[in-house]
Image (cartoon, rainbow, N blue to C red; front, side, top):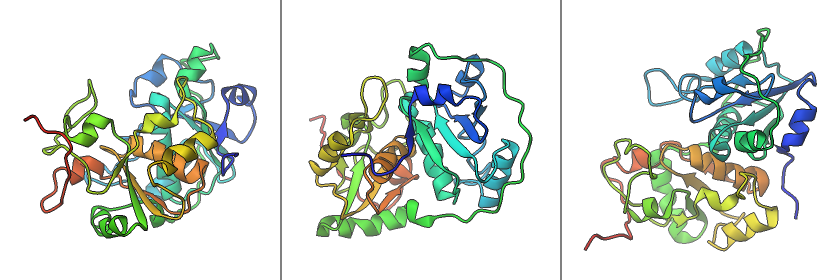
Length: 287
């Protein structure tokens, strides 16, 4: 079984196309300082907080600001955008989802294995930021079918109970159970309650990857999700803490496996775990 869409490129392909016109590399890291220590030649930097988030509201920048951002990065409407980053491409997948949600129609790709594979293979890096010529990027219209809001997730619980919908919790098993509210060595991020959304299936994002950060085969991925009852005929919503890990799983489900209805709940557990009047489940007790 092949992947549903041609959305992955290898590190070898990227190196061979570093100087190919129309191929634009964007590095998106959790650690925003990594880019400055060395990046693939020609890659521009995208800061997931500064560049994508609204400066005041808990929301994203508007579509017109996305057009401005891409224009500042020198990206034209017909360029192929290749995203990569650290953490097995968490934030690169987040940017991929965000650009798709924002209505970007450019061919979008992820470099399979991300930054860790590029560096491990000794491929070329530079500390020089590329000189880009600003472009005029066309207006965009959001694709709201790719994003789930809190009230939509709450309404979705009935579909989960009825068997027509699915919720995928991609966090670690301890986060899912309620034993902890964050990953090891990560901040609490202000979540008051531990646990998971009722009816969610625990499918940690890392189960979809190999040790080198590349994605597992389509057959392995299909077996992983179908084994938990998350099938292509269902309306699927994925979530984590702040949507970076769930973007990775959204990418697997929608882009690699071709599930037609997959949404990313970007509010995720930092919203759900703090919200008044929303149910949770826990499978961990200190007693």
